[in-house]
Length: 312
Image (tube, rainbow, N blue to C red; front, side, top):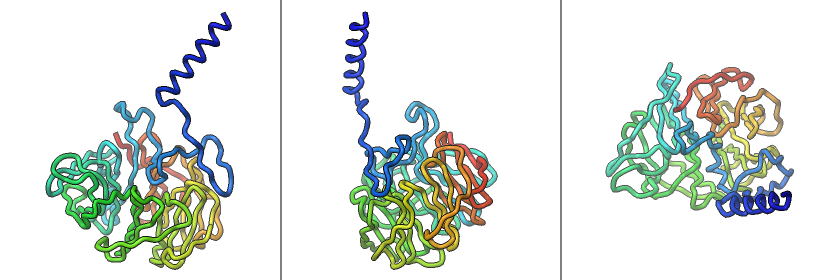
């Protein structure tokens, strides 16, 4: 009977592997070997939003983008199924189907606010005669209508905005950091020390950047021409709302603060959940999306967190 049971287990294991059950390879971080629970998948880092349980079965959507209107506090949330808008005072998001000349825009967007009421984004169409990759698009009405900024048909999975400065990472060249200093009309490239996951800019210095990677966080003080390692935490998410407040949130939800551009760090608190996306809000509020499609907010520099909204 034990022999029969062993044969059955072998058959079950082979069947599982044939259906795609083979484990994905672990990354090879330079500084330290990551714990098994934090092992990255083979998906490019800029796409590693933590999926919600049951994704694809009608459960909570995975969030891949958060942006907060600096004017009225509206929260825009990009997910695979839809783009959501959380109005001021609301605890839930409403789906938004945006119109772009030639069709409609799907929820598969990365969006950022460039000013009160004005969004910039990149992603894919939903319907109509539009290219698969929309390049850079802009909305002045919280996602209801869009116009093309740069029809380069690039798919930016990471965007950062600082005035006229745009930093982007697109799927066709994830090892590059794309840079525009004129609002997206013209672009050139910088080569960081490792593939960027998250990109942020010092609010007081447009040439002072930080990127997180699978090999830690690196900082440049000369617009990406050279980089220095500042933290060995791999795969972190970064928020830089003030020049003296650079936040790093690791994959387990640990929050740390640097007051000197990443040279030193202090522990701040912990998030109850696995973070997938982050954003800065008004009055230096911090926002984090976690598994279960919840948006958490901190108003005390990352020490404590409450639920700001839930996306369904």
